[in-house]
Image (cartoon, rainbow, N blue to C red; front, side):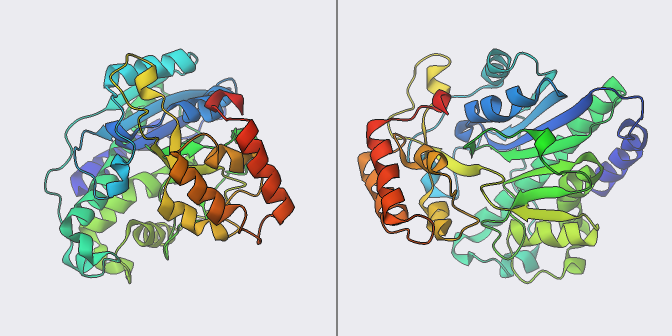
Length: 356
């Protein structure tokens, strides 16, 4: 780890250095996780396509081929049938202006190093070593993204201005226009689901902070773990400690500002059909995340975005659960009248991904 990070640091000194003569901004998008859990269409339609005129965009996918997930809900609606070739084809189909598409589906570490102190401080000890190994693979995936970004920057002799990191199952509820966001000298990430740290599912950051975000989590875990003063063993806490150590400014924002939620495929949406049907299923949203919805920064206040979450996405049983828990009973965010209006809209206006 030390040799790899040091070598990358030497290389990126000139490759990632900003140049005043650069006319068109460059954006690097890193997507990590698993091939079979990848939701891509909302990312392309609501982020990549909408920013492809203002930015030259490189997309890097670092995705494993794991057949077992620590979180059992992953298999609630099946798995997508992605391959590297299909990902490239889908990106070119939905966003032809993307400059480069890198799909790194190489083998992940089978038995990554487990720091005993991190394991002992785990906030979910019943999941054992498997969960810790999953965390370490996540940090290695970030480092692999960083390695690809350095290579692309050197090849083009043009630095990036902005990076975006998204998890495989990140579902964008609404368009995100980067020029409307304040990212300069900041890492912008979700306030919700921080679990005593910083939410590590997605982030929008100034490129000058890329090294701290992408390379330092695995570096610090392997080489300087004791210096982080970790009190809770989870990725969120480690990310917070690492970014504080490397003096990376962070802005944690609500889902209204960063309209993204984790998703899972809807039951019976995955089949053996050919591209693109088998890789563009509707998405459901996790019970665990939706339980956080009673906090203002976790649950969108906009009615249309709420409809995007619970309308025409899940099984009937899950739709009823969502309405019961987050509409009719959600007095903190919606009056009963507004909740009834949203529910009525849901009944009469089924939602598809292309309609909002």
